[in-house]
Image (cartoon, rainbow, N blue to C red; front, side):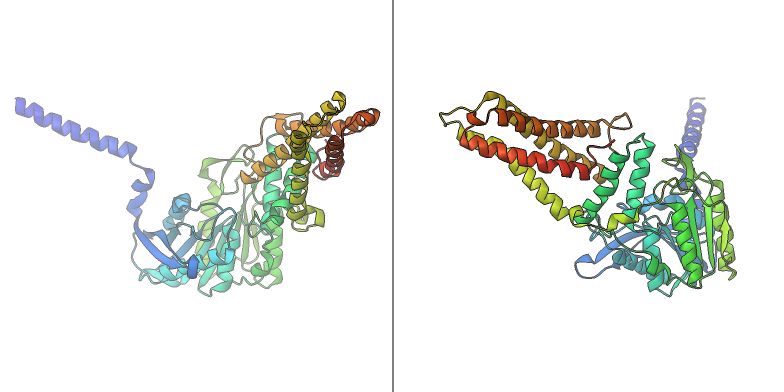
Length: 476
């Protein structure tokens, strides 16, 4: 009897473990019954940029030759798992699919080359084309966001590319696109101050461009797109807030038709984000699922293309309407926009405002006294001016470094940090005026070294005025 109970207990425990395994097994693992996975590596780049890239090939569990596709990352570190859902979508369509980790050599926030990334794509294609289960005449590319610049480059350089799919492809310059995206985010969180947006987004864009802090900022995708002769499916979400969908789609369609490539389809996904997911928060957040039309329309287009009947100049869905156009002027610089000029101004302000305190150390030994009232307002001006300049530049770089993700509490249509910087700017201008007035009234009671200090301070305050006007710190 005891043995029977123990045997029954073991069977029950085994069934319980099996049930739990079925409940908690990852979905992607469960789905692997329809396809196999293979880990691969391949070499790309030359010289110091030569690198071994790791990837995964997803292969349908069907016999015979298969069409294939290489997935190209958007901006960022580019872990292959970020494209896992897209890869599974393509392998369900019967395609051998390659995803890979983006390179680390030559790619960072301050360094990148789309030519180098395109070479990685071509190397990935060559790797997948050596497989005996791949139809080498049916290898295509899928590029997301930044991949919408990279995939066309690869397609223009390699005759092996049979077709190209993009989602969220920007057909404007990278800095123009990023500025538009930043403006959208500022509006979304409640910023209504035109001055704050003009200063941080547009003037800020010119600074980071001139300073070399935004690599490939002025890359022009138009000449490359003119070379594309393969069938193209270009997809945009109607609520794309990262890339201007209306502008990009119009530019791409015009280029392809003008250059004689009529095998183009523009697909607009209703209520979809930049990535093609169902939209949340008016396009600024994703739900876990792609929109229903994404996979359906993708499969329909692939079926037509792979059978040799690509659609001719077709539009699916309603073209999105942008609330504002992207600013092309951000890559056109005047002398006062340049980082060199702005950095000289920063150095000047630091010398003037910090110099006031340094000279004051040597001035303590003087027996003659300067009127306390003059010293008081001079000190206020030095502190206010220094804090204004340092806080402004810290905030501007914070906004650009984190892409507008960290802005601060919004009050009166602007961030509390912006309000503080504006108040400090106004205070600095008023302190400058007040110092001039009290110094004039007490001009006979000012020591020689103090005259030098006050002169520098007044000069700094006067120069700060046009600087503040340029950066929109005195406007609403």
